Figure 1 (cartoon, rainbow, N blue to C red):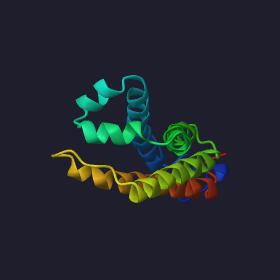
Figure 2 (figure 1 turned 180 degrees about the vertical axis):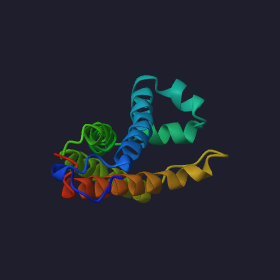
Figure 3 (figure 1 turned 135 degrees about the horizontal axis):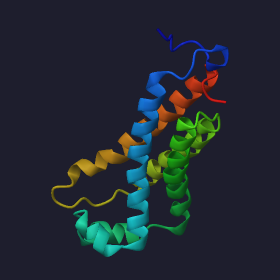
Figure 4 (figure 1 turned 60 degrees about the horizontal axis):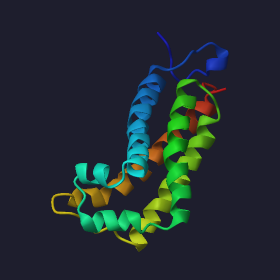
Length: 152
């Protein structure tokens, strides 16, 4: 039986939960990457298919250019962090930290400039909080795996 608290460096191997967290993380963050790409390449057609009304689309279109930096950091830091976690690379910790900072900046921006919600999309106001919570968990988890010697 494998003890998942034994460092990988001393022969304990990779704990099973790293694969579960890594795969779920990659799936979750891949959707974020898909959403980023589609929002920026398909624009109105994609946003309408997602249920956004004119006011929500105007909000996204009025987003200042500087907000793309935390958005990019949050999305792509998370995707690369997920891949690094699955590859058992220590830099997953730093990539998830970049992602967390990007998500936190986006959350603060959204709190200071609330997005108008289309009818039936009121639950979307909680999504930035969920994203920050997941980003924080992934950063913490990668840090724990690095401290245990699972990530090299």
